[in-house]
Image (tube, rainbow, N blue to C red; front, side, top):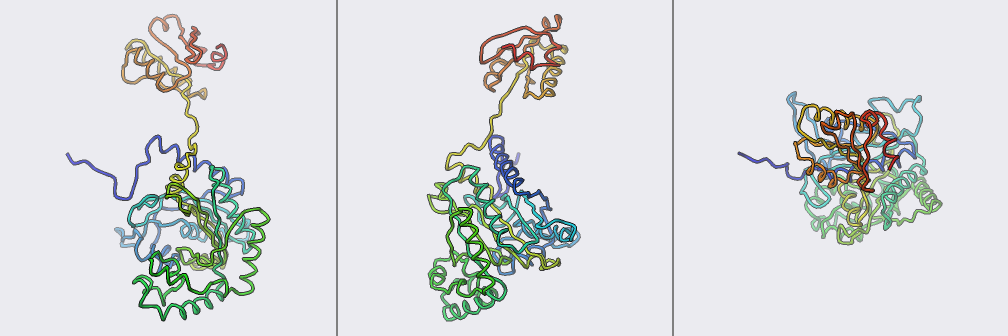
Length: 430
């Protein structure tokens, strides 16, 4: 018989691992709530144009990595490669831009994303992101709040060796001036660029700055800096961001060569890196984001600004595990119900008792494999049960059960009704 395997570039998140995911997700919900961000859940697939229009037709996502197809109604759809575009579409469709909705409108999301790329450590074809978006304010202070929240989240997970890198991509006027300066520099070197960068040269030369090709990197190292082409307004925006980061005592560096892999960013962009052994002790980006003032309008909404970040959960977990962080909460088993004998009465009573314990708020388990009492006690011990509750035909006849404190190694006999109604009073007797 054929044995099936998971698709290449995907992973099963199994018990023992899923608890780690729950931990980082719960911590995100906790931190984001402090900043008044609320959860939004958007579809896993969207109209293809939602991503093609927002990501940019020269981005790797659109040109190489999109999981897109025509469905049975011949609609061109795509599995979401990132979270922002779908959130923007939902923001517009649900008219959250209206004056009756308080601004900034703050949301967070978490869930699977899809990109067709070569699987490697921390980069899968199905991967998971946690991200936030805030709409409706041009204030540099909101950029700083988003950066501060990301730093806060990572520190609360236990990461301390972090580096915040920022840059500005300026406003439309800044970008136009810089684009021309970049073209003037790159055009004489066009034949030395990689094939991808040659394609991008006249479509979107800023994308060349994000190239990982070694030859491109050598050329980029001597390219003009966008910071020299910022308008006074864009310069002021960046200056205020830096001042506010200083006030919050968030250390940062300005990297004028940094760009983001998506075309919709402008003004502030940032990356937060970890000096993690998970990637050989090299500075590795775990969280990134920025401002995107034209994205809402690009998808048919009003001219409203947005700012946000995203982080990959798989990569975050690799970093946390490399630093040996405790990622799971204790999972105690309060009571294990041991049934003596295979009679229907004992089986029924065991189920009634274990269910009564659960309804009183205790974690409880029982045997479902017809094990002998000795084997059941062994299982209870292996699972770390604090108490065992023993029920047999003799106990049922007397309407009693035996309760043993496995830590104190003490056992008492109590009325069956007390177990099902008030186990707390019994545990207090030990």
